[in-house]
Image 1 (tube, helix red, strand yellow):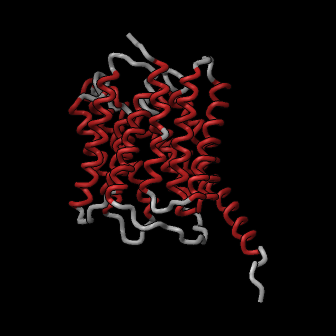
Image 2 (cartoon, one colour):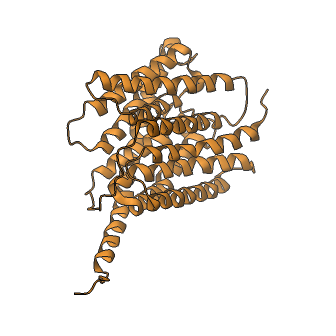
Image 3 (cartoon, rainbow, N blue to C red):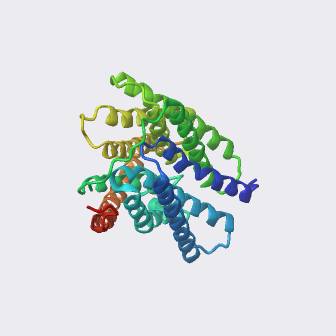
Length: 355
């Protein structure tokens, strides 16, 4: 029997906001401007989510609405952190804020707004934890951003993130991801224990596989890779967390995390790191979707002999990814206009020094 619905959702609300905190700890770009950008963009995204939920939801369930707002805030704030190195704090806030309104909200509603969801109805795809919104849409929009000109910004990078700080960051992201994957269930049920265990094991295994894969590829150990191992494992297992047996969970995590790590580790020198990381996320979700379609309890190809779910999983990633890419170009263009305007205003101010 389902119990403690509100308690679970309030707890998940608190945990989810640890994701951008963890990414900020692991970031090479920090400062007051970035923190302000993270907070303001998260607030905008949360307000947008509450507005959308009041328009499309027939329930007055306050904990659920606040949790959805926390989901939106966490993803938008994380996107600020991930794009600040390219766009600066102001540009990243504009990009992530517009992206949350134009991309995240529609995709999130399409995956979580009804049962069955629009994504399941149209593509026949499974997306338990709204990974198409949190990972696919975000990553493809970041790829689109990297296709645009890079503005000339002052270098305010901090020293390399230490190993201890990176591991703490990974722990924050992992706890936030667990809060996300438990919170989307909305209720405490007989499946909650399995979901929590799958999330814990999958995230830990994903981090380990990422580190091992990069070491096999000849790269030195980088503790920030633990963060990316957690992020990519979250994308891979989040599609079908509640439907994965131990063997399916291990297979999904190992194949997806290894493939994603290989994308980053084997990239050519000088390649855009943000683009490689975003591609790695897409690879992880795609591989995770295929393994889920093959091995999911009761409805995977191993049980039914049908390839329809495989095609549905890949089709959903492709279509949502293309749409998010196009809108990502629009959001990136708006951010570049703002950055350019800020640069012009700064250069036109009279100098405080005379002579």
